[in-house]
Figure 1: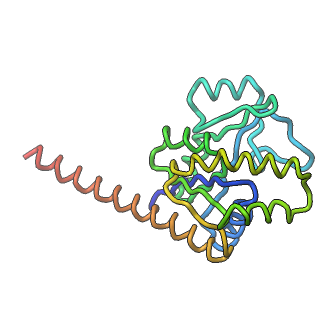
Figure 2: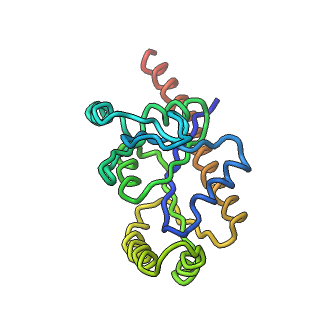
Figure 3: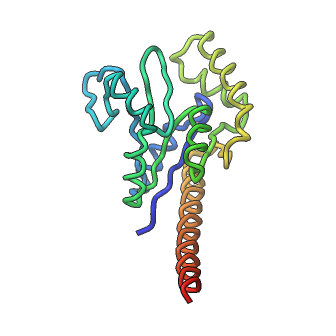
Length: 208
């Protein structure tokens, strides 16, 4: 059984990341969404190990000290982070892990896990992004403007990603995302197979 991959997905608010990943999970059974650890209290209906791994502040800080997180951050007084052991267990079982995260977290994961595949999702234009944000009908003009300002900052970090995925046609984009991940999966498997083979051959030659 080949090892799974870790794919980090980022993108502007309104780019459709959540819908894209949901459709990918519906279409293919080998993908799993990464589960974060957090110090915030569970909300009604949330279960430990399903929505989040709920930790005390002391437990979370112990995980930081032991380098047990691929990345972490503090939002509104609570820690959030990606447990290394859970991700690696899923990958060892051959599953492809999807992790939705912002740019700084993606950069941190790439430092600790260079094999991770980084994909940035964008609408086809800034005007389309504005149309999608406005079309939600749930946010004030001030909130929409703050999201556009945030997107302008995030756009400067797109060069850090391995691929830029344009989410114009959803079904087409889902197919492209799957192809990118499976291509990385095959490449990793082939590299590991070659590395194992040449290591074994060199060891035999060394002993001759």
